[in-house]
Image (tube, rainbow, N blue to C red):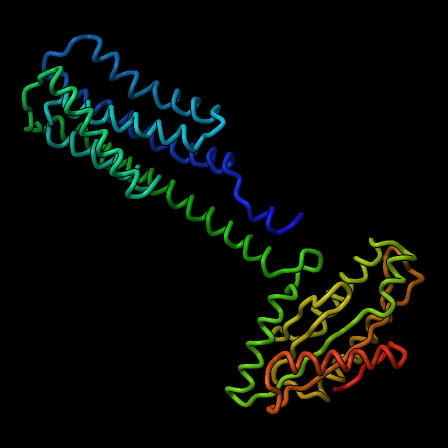
Length: 351
């Protein structure tokens, strides 16, 4: 599957994930908000259907909103509408309480926290506008008298909401941050690693080669570049099948990891071609490393082709201060590899 397809976001799945993140804070916030509002309404004359509406809003609406959103073909848009409904009712309950100080502040601030966490400042201000609208409409219809003072009993009833809701929202935010970090890590792996061998792909490996070239210039260090090619790889694929070809690539990858140092940089340069950067290594040392690798490879046997003796050719080039760019360094190793293949393969040539 192409990398572009893997990186392309899925709006439906992203919307479902958003709905699920909002669900728990809504259940906790509206459920806790019921007790905050009820602590004020019970001190003033209220018709019975208002209590019923408060109960529905606090304990039934969160689940209805969730079902509505996950069954929508556009979950994200449906959940944004749900948040707008929350804001409208929040403003209405503030007005019904006569703008009682502590419960009103809790409702406005908790909804503000949720909206900022869900959609940033744009969603926050849209919701705030609907809160104001809901408050104005209810104020004009119900004409509730101002009841700003908060009693000690109302403070005690609201305290759990002050403690539980921020913690629950923080937990949701933490989980979201971890999910995004893991997703970012996966995207980075897709962009820099070869899908089969699990080592640096060509583009990222050349980037690291460029960095090593700059390091050699800046600190006057030495390094050696090695290009390795599996001999007669096309014939292996044609004779034994591509699964054996893949097995050969993986075997060479494993041997490179076992034979080289942690600081050495391995990359898959092409189909059957590998590149290795050996920092602080002279060409004679690199030659011995490659010779040992060739011996190990030829002694290995592939599981699905035990009669096949795998052999490799290599071209090595040491960094030279006269090189005008890392491409010239790469070209020198490539020319050495070409000489090795032209001379009969199964050999190592120096630039």
